Image (tube, rainbow, N blue to C red):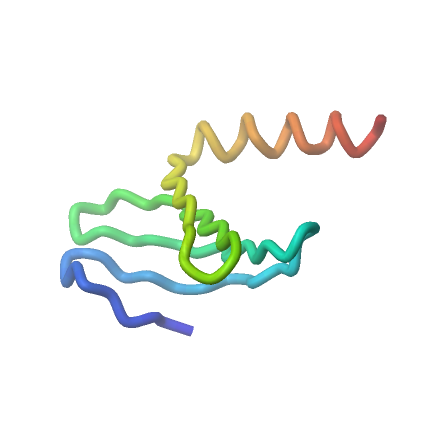
Length: 74
């Protein structure tokens, strides 16, 4: 699903929306820029109007994934 965007130089596709603890919602998006840059965008919604948005490059996503797997293994 491609989402509307305010930046015509980027194409945003929502990959997943997750319910998180304490009434938070996490949206995972793929952002493709006309320049060829590809990012993962994490949008964390807290309450009605507060958002934290992280744009991550591939090496950062790889490192985050590794840390999450270590955490999951306990």
